[in-house]
Length: 166
Image (cartoon, rainbow, N blue to C red):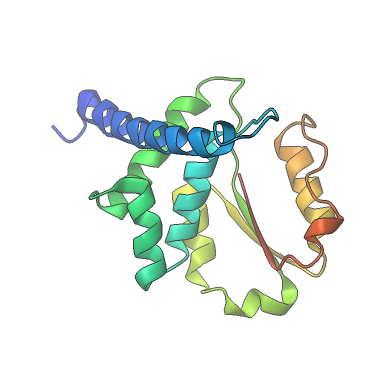
């Protein structure tokens, strides 16, 4: 029963429903509240980034983030189910997904060492430390979007200490 593909599909369907719920909330906030500009966002990316963020936190912060993500569900199950959704979407050659956390050298010591392992194991992501985030963020984005997005970093981000990317 544990390897039953219907069970796996049900778990992936639950994550899909949670992503869609969050997408609806975000769409209302971004598009229908007097915004007269075009808005493009990826609900799956936002959901995955929030999950990565929740995994990096504890206590009240983690509880607040997981409340947004999974209602009453167990967070560890959500992470596992999200990996199933990521694998399912990855079967589409046009869907690209990659994760990274880039941290400025001067605060890298504040990152719990096992977070890099969890990021890799649970999200297929990488943890980087650098003295200058700008070129590394843009290089990572350019590489992982196959050049479709050449850069995301601009001067307004110069004081950024940590950047989570999906």
